[in-house]
Image (cartoon, rainbow, N blue to C red; front, side):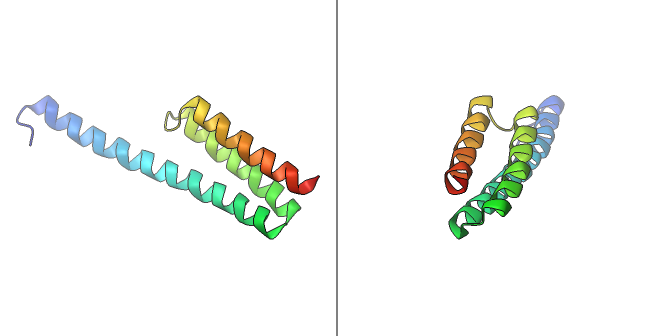
Length: 88
């Protein structure tokens, strides 16, 4: 355990950030799973609706710095491509 006051504060701050990052990542994973479930079920309209929510969630994670911008773009691109494949 840290002995210096500033090091103790860094530990507390990191714990808060880790918790926030974990929550945001969990939200992203849940949103992506919802889209993938609708794709497998073949529900094009529900998949499109869930896609919009997933894109919003991923963009929020990117803006908070939880996801790298290329990772977020890749996730959005793959989801969009999959949804477009079932609607076409």
